[in-house]
Structure formats: structure tokens, C-alpha cells
Length: 178
Image (cartoon, rainbow, N blue to C red; front, side, top):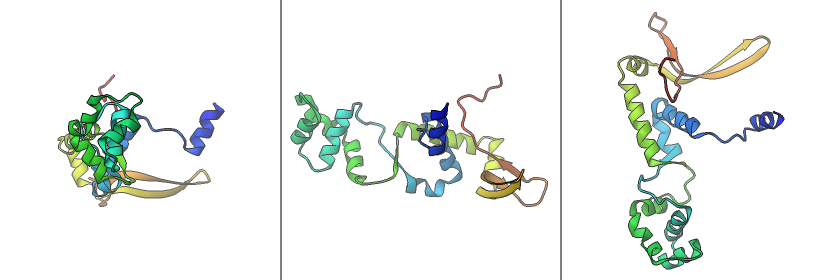
């Protein structure tokens, strides 16, 4: 539709969870050296509601627990006062990362992708390509059909011999044959 085309051209399409996971896996495997410059992993044990998170944000910003609860809830309850004690790691995470511009990654997602990244690195077939690549994120430019083109090769081994290769990393839900 025209609306989809405009969104595509303006790059306003929100990435799906699968797209985000693919980007994270790509970064973990092919650009791990700057992962921590771009991403921060939140604790696995975190509040389940927006109001609970808001209370902890207020506390991290220096509000008293009473003030935080009153600002976050229309009808505060005594149980809400216990939130900082129930989620101390998450509260510390908020305090440590106040004003941070890094993308926040859910702890469960990070752990799942870490397991997947290690499985790829040490898979008998995949590890040959992973550990023998001589370059990652290689920018290439070429001309074809009267147009200038450019792109990135995820990983390449280019030693000028028969063992050279190029690979493109993709994360899919299921790679089973159909």
C-alpha cells in the first residue's frame, strides 16, 4: 500500500522482536568488541507492571519510596512500598544506568541468544566458518545495470585459495527441512 511504501522510505517501521533478536545475535557473533558500547542487559528479575517499574524509577531518581508509590499509583497499597526490597537488582540497574543512551536488552533474551551464539560458535560445521573468517562486516561497492550498489558481507575469508568463503548470518525460527 502507499502507506507501507512511505513508512519503508521514511524507515518508520518498528522492528519486530525477531528482527531485534537477529540484530543482537549478529552483534554478539560478528561484532562482540563493541556490544557493550551499544547495549545494556537488564536483570532477569524485574517488575511485571509499568507502575512497579515507575516506582523503582522514581526511587532511582531520589524520591522516597512513599513519594514514588504515590506518584505511580492512583490507589497506593502497602504492598507497593515493598517494591525496592523485592527488586533490588533492578533498582540498582536503574541507578547505575540513569541517563544512559544504550539500547536495553531483556535479560532472558540476552541469555537465550548467548546460548545460541555459543552453539553456533562450537557447532562442528559452523565453527570452521566462524573461526576462519578473516574479515567481518566487509563493505563492498559495485556497479551493475547502470546503478551504483553497496552492501556488507557478514563474514569472509579471502586468502586467494580454494578454502575461501563468504557467509551471511541469519536467525530463523526453525531451520528444519520442509
